[in-house]
Length: 166
Image (cartoon, rainbow, N blue to C red; front, side, top):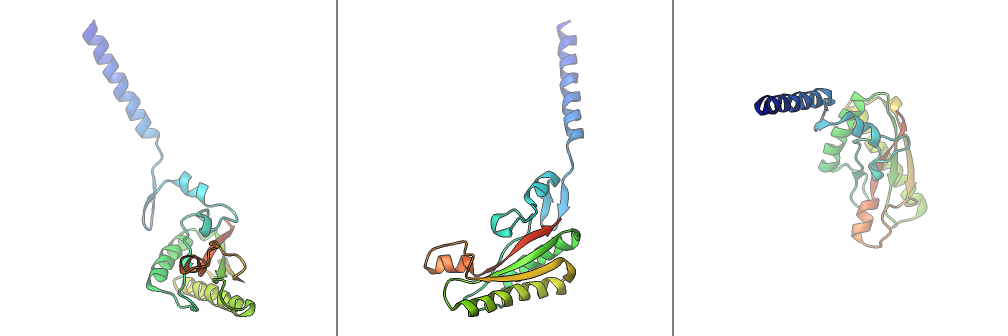
């Protein structure tokens, strides 16, 4: 009797585990690995920003001082962003160009626009629909780091992504 109970208990445990495994959702394959659909959907918010990690897997691009030229790291990041945007063509974005606090207001607005446009042009060259991308420059008006040193300035020289439709 004890042996039969033990066998039934083992069988019940095996069946329970099999049911749990069978009910789990399969992860989705993305450009850089496996991602759970629910986790990705939660991180992709309307008006979500890459600065706040709420724009899905889209990552912010950083620039050198007084430059709108893409670095090799920025190009690599944009290639991953482009792959995701092409796979999710219902998502539209706004690219926001930013600068650090140094320089005049008009100069920084122009530099921020150049940064946003360079990012847009690179994404379009990689096959992302231009109709899904808008750009805007904030110049030095919306810093994410408020220090007055190179560490803070380098975080503010950026182009970030905001989800405008999904």
